[in-house]
Every structure is written in structure tokens, then in C-alpha cells.
Image 1 (cartoon, one colour):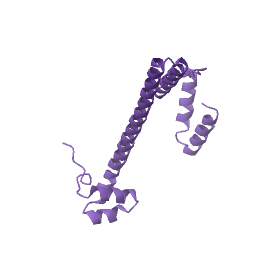
Image 2 (cartoon, rainbow, N blue to C red):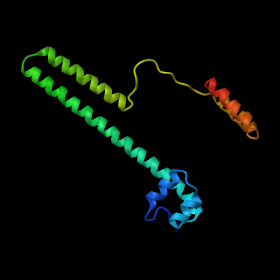
Image 3 (cartoon, helix red, strand yellow):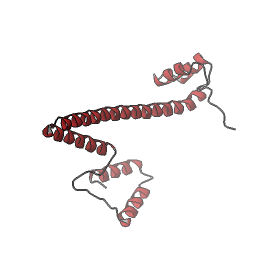
Image 4 (cartoon, helix red, strand yellow):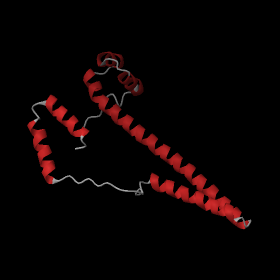
Length: 158
């Protein structure tokens, strides 16, 4: 049965997390909160996971807010179109339809629909992949040289 993180279950976890994030030494934090430095070393990974989760939640919330605004714009355009059609004002009705088309295009872009224009498909040959793997393998014992080769390949788009 896996053990639970002592720092995660600590009543002052927020203060512990803040101290770790502020860069305080683990010994100081451990002494202050009655934990061991090794517990804090392991707990640091939990902080990173919590931050990543919080960022993804914030991104989802931001996305929902944007979609709500787009839905409100769509409702406004539809309302204006209906009013213009009832009044016999076809120019305004057509303008409202044009706005709704723009909203649909925006939603398509947000959902990652295919973009208009030319597309570039890059196909890496098996031969190139084999050469790249052989070069990187040969350079494994020479990290500085390997890093320079990786930089050079990145510059040429390989």
C-alpha cells in the first residue's frame, strides 16, 4: 500500500508550499513544520503537479468565458437579424447574417478546424530517421558535441 505524503496532509500545507516556492532551504522549512528535508524533497513534485493542474483549470475557465462571450454575440446577431427581417430591412438582415458567419468561422478556428490556404506536409524518410538516430547515439558520450549538433540540426529544420 503506497504511503501518503506527510507534507500534503500537513495542516499548514499552504505555508509549506509557499516556503518551498519562495526558495527557502528544506532544512529551515523542515524544522519550522516538524518534517524531514527528504519529505520536502519528495513533496516538491506534488507542488509542480498542483500548479500544472491549476493552470489547466484556469485555461478551461478562460476558454469557457470566451465561448460564453461568443454565444452572447451569436444571440445578439440572431436577434438583430430576426428584427431586421420582421421590419423588412433586408440590408440589416444580411449584415447580421454576415456577422453570424464570422462567429461561425471564429468558432471553427477555436476548435482547430482546417485552415484555408496551402498546407505543408513534412514526411521524414526512414533513412533520415536512421541516420539521425545513429548520429545521436554516437554522440551520447559527448554531451557538448551532441548539443551543438542538435542546435545545428534545429537551425536547418531537421
